[in-house]
Image 1 (cartoon, rainbow, N blue to C red):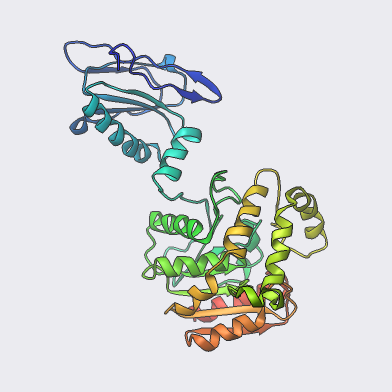
Image 2: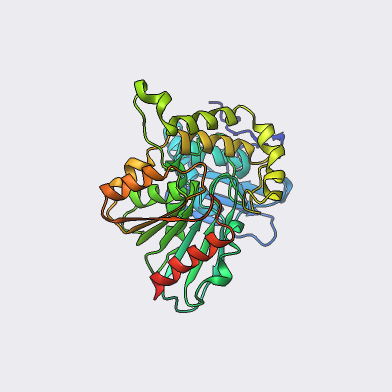
Amino acid sequence: MDDSISAFVAADAGRGAEVTPPAKSASAAITVKRRDRETLWLEPLGIIAVPFCADMSNVTTEATPPHTVVYGYGYSSIFEKLVITTILHSLATLLTSHPFVLRICYDGEMDTVLHRWLKIPYTLHVTEFLSPKRPKATFILLHGIGNSAKAWEALIPLLPKNVRVIGIDLLGFGQSPHPHWSPYDARTQARSVGATLLKMRLLQQPTIVGHSLGSLVAVEVAKRYPLIVKKLILCSPPFYRQTEEKRRLLQRDEILKDLYRRMKKYPLTLESLSPLIVKLKLASPALNINEGNVASYVAALESSIVNQTSMQDAAKLKLPITVLYGALDPVVIGSNIRSLAKKNSNIIAKKIATGHEVVGRYVRIVAKEISQIVS
């Protein structure tokens, strides 16, 4: 590599920006013209990280090898992301004996590097519904497909005031990230939920309350992080068997899966029908399938529901599980849930006179279950 060309060119909000390498001088130095930003020095690694939120004209540097100078945007958690990336490039610098000057756009290249290539789970958007100073218990609410934490708003006024209640927007929904490349399977969702819970530093083992897709994610969280979770309350979990090929056409599981596969082929129809479904009160008012999340909806439908292993995983869990399912629910197979309860003595199955969505009477039943845990 030519000494005069050691710059990394990255996209800046859709336009290319070439960054020139630092000039060689007698000693390493950095001059930063910036507003309301701090400069992070990682001298033991020969790294200088400079966050900023303006264009390159606001930052000038002079440094000598083997320093790696990194420019990044001023997001709240940018430093922890920069550290990971700069360590990698510091190694590259030592191997090539050339400095690198990097300009990182978190919304694009940085996102891909951290979460797709390095497999670092996302942290998700959370809503603190109730947060008393000394909570008697903690509950995590995971919504269903196409919804957000807002789906639980009707539940909150019915809950005891001495509990901490946190709603999480699953990956691809609500205000959480919507990576276009994510498979949106239960494993990916659970890793993001787990990372979010660890970041929150909860003082109590929470009970996770999941609805539909959220219940499948709750099972995966309990499977992967058994020390974190105290109990599960699963509302309308679409548990489906992995049916043998020769019996496939005779199983209701496969009939529903085939329906989902057909729905997957018509994302624009799903998007246009969602307002009507809400208007007819067939779904939660929080259901919102739009251009921004329809890809997430379709991917989650395929990866988390059609190609699931949640029923087999739930059968092996050791923690207490309460399963609520509606007698009028068209997408939940009651016989699967009853079979699961017979296999695992930790599971209590309760059939209730409701449909699939947690609305109306269903909300009061969930509130009662939570209140019983607290009392």
